[in-house]
Amino acid sequence: MFSPLSCVDAFTDRPYSGNPAGVCLLETPRPRDWMQQVAAEMNLAETAFVERQGDAFGLRWFTPQTEVDLCGHATLAAAHVLWTDGVVPSAEAITFHTRSGALQATSRGAWIDLDFPAEPAEASRAPAGLLEALGIASVWTGRNRMDYLVQVSSEQELRRIAPDFRALAGVECRGVIVTCRSDSPEFDFVSRFFAPRVGINEDPVTGSAHCCLAPFWANRLGKSRLAAFQASARGGVVHAELRGDRVQLSGQAVTVHRGVLLR
Picture 1 (cartoon, rainbow, N blue to C red):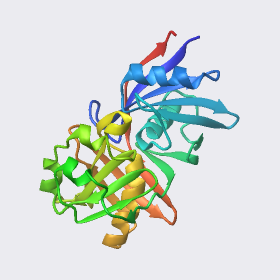
Picture 2 (cartoon, rainbow, N blue to C red):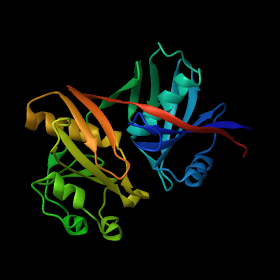
Picture 3 (cartoon, rainbow, N blue to C red):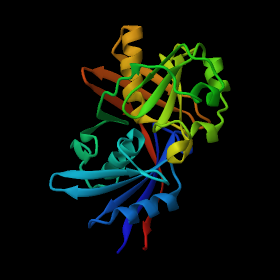
């Protein structure tokens, strides 16, 4: 049984930048253990598994170590593959059924818009070891259902962060978002995302983190439309618009290679 498998760089318009995601199109249901093994074999931040369900698609996301509840860049990559491979006409919206509810993707020229739930963080004290593992002081610290959010004072400080990943993996959360105002007039804010607990020391570009960052910065900047840069080594651009309890995430994507799984 062959399964088409693509690697897509998401939240970028250039290959070998942004965040790479595996996208596996399933013709028949496959067991969870098999999907986890494929994700470990791919060894990317996330591999998305897509299965047609009537007029919509089931979508699951796996890191090399575990299944996750929400992933923006692999959703963007999955929509890109369905349109570019001709599975869905580019003029049609795509609905994904996921562990975080129904998510919709629409094509807008070179851009893909994703309708995601807002995941605002509430102010909280940093847990023991978090700031020490990051090697920083915080301006503000909060948490949502998945991640801690830490605001720092400057982009220079954010870019200098070199976490102790072993210590950071001991913090009970999916990951840690670090953010600050951008020094560039092109962007409203910048961020980095660390998730060693789920097998990703630093994620290149994290769509789901922007479901937290969008309400955070919209409140502080007094604007609902935001342009963001994730300052990883690969880097990536995310546009976000806060719409009540939803966030529209927008980005571009490039297919880097295609193949088939033989097992």
